[in-house]
Amino acid sequence: MSDASSLALSAQDCLVALMVAVSASDEDIRTAELIKIQSAVNMLPIFVDYDNDRLSTISKTVFDLFEQEDGLDALFGLIREGLPERLYETAYALACDVAAADGTLEEAELRLLEEIRYELEIDRLHAAAIERGARARHLS
Image (cartoon, rainbow, N blue to C red; front, side, top):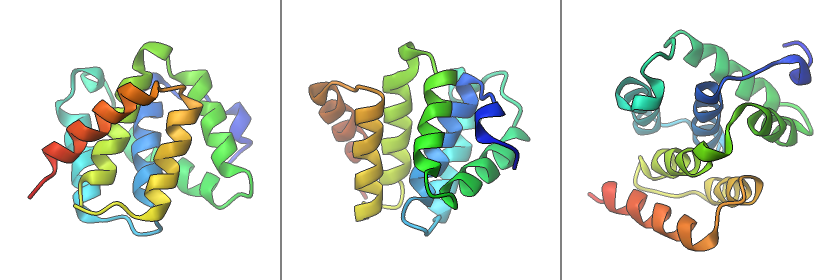
């Protein structure tokens, strides 16, 4: 991959990148998480004009960044550049849904969700409501 700072992500790319990052954070990308990402992209209005072929490109970008020492910082830099503030809570909700999709929350996923909350300046009360909703949607 070329210099990450030269890569521009659309708002939808940013949402996908965060979902992929949460899935990959525990180094075990589960089928339930992949299905959650795919269904979000296929069904949510924000992705109505999104090119599904971008999924693999954005996934590879995230994986490449995760191999770099400051990759997470670079990822958040790209997210801050490409994601409008009005979609911050949407991004966090999608990240929570992916984390909850397999029925377990690994320590690495929890740490990344905490980092996302911090980076996107999600109000703690709003974050708790989003997390509660994700948990409720994924109970088995």
